[in-house]
Image 1 (cartoon, rainbow, N blue to C red):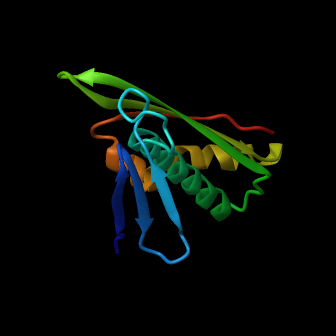
Image 2 (tube, rainbow, N blue to C red):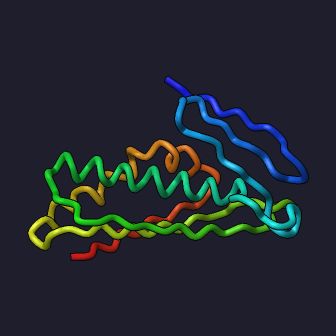
Length: 141
């Protein structure tokens, strides 16, 4: 099991990202204004945050489906912290907020998922040794 991503330099700090599955299309990435200029696409830090958030939300959906919880909606956001560490910029933290829309009678099942869903997120658990990741689940009933 694995994956492949190919990246080609376009100009300045812009890259085209191609994924290993037909139909996934391409993604344009760029660096922030300090380095990259006009920011034509997300930078790698934003992609890291998006990957962690997406993975956590998918894990939440998986758990809720297993518990037969009707999910009315699911929204999320991630805020990244970038700081200098030993003189170099690093992503030092991610704060994730997930808002599942569920029925009031499913709150107990949601609480069961909150206890375990993070463990199944491949991305978040892979980066936690180097990046502080805080996850908050705020149900919308």
